[in-house]
Length: 286
Image: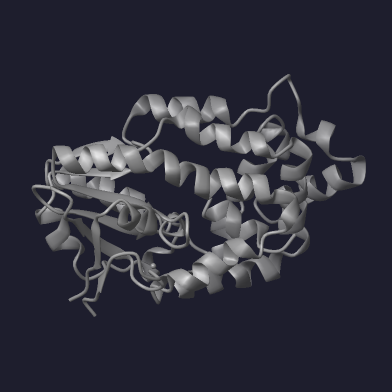
């Protein structure tokens, strides 16, 4: 399955666009339709090496003009982190050895031991999809950070309210579209094609740093059709669920939204969905 690793991570001139292509740009101003103040939407990357982290132009001013920050999840809420630890566990007492044959399990065990220095038995009940993330520091050869952590820090520094667009359970429900065996196949592919997946990550990173939303959208289009339902839940279904919440928050006060960049482009992207509801969606650059 092409790009499964990239999908696992995603889980981009001051031109006025009101329903256009939205092919480039990471920071967008949303105004009009009787909003008292504009709000902003920024496309994030969930994993990036610290030396590649960029404070994109316009973010500081957008934060200054906003009253609160909204992420996909409110990661500052301790209950979210506790719930995530519980939600990663497979149901019905399933273990990794139940969804892999002996040779596959031995390969995963050897990879975790030899490459990551971890004992796979400690994570025997973790959903295979989440095991992929444990390889990230080794794969990208750094201790990664994220734009989400940056905006959490900004909320604290600027004394801004921090909220989430969805609940943890809503996010975990996305994975119901994948069987544990399908998740295991993603994990096996990541291990078997490790260098290729590393190259895919760097390609995704380059698209992101170039603010190329169209190229990022293409990554999702190349996903094997066996996983269409997962892709639909991961991107389209969540985008449509978020729009009404985004509207309500914008109407209350100026808000800075930070969501994964893969949620911005396309027919079902949040930019086009907002433009379709009559808002002026304008790319912000300096």
